[in-house]
Length: 153
Image 1: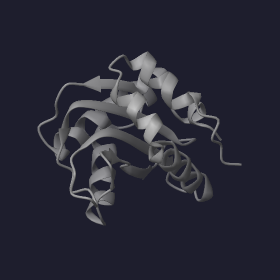
Image 2 (image 1 turned 90 degrees about the vertical axis):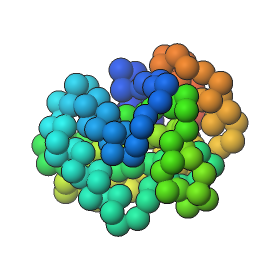
Image 3 (image 1 turned 90 degrees about the horizontal axis):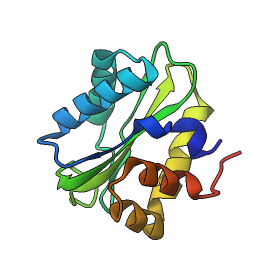
């Protein structure tokens, strides 16, 4: 598994600002609906349900919201870079500007965990994050995310 198998170029966006976490989840749901055909309301509900278990802001300006959904055949992702960081209740209490949302089939087990590990490892790399923050073009952001050779077997 690699990021290019999870993240389509059209699912990468640069957004100048988002007013709240709730609005961010709505944007993620809308993008997941337009790109992957997922039900926007179900996606938002699943993201909020997962977030209620504990914040998915992992620190250093990165958030990894994720959810399991019916009607999905494989793990899919949406990546957003925010120009204006958003308060996300992250573990380090810092606002986030790099958001990689993962959507997995409801009954996926290890594939969901492998995808989370892959994305987490990629966004833990300070050099990768610096390159992402230096770009606003979605194609360049996708290229940075998929350039790494990090893979999970």
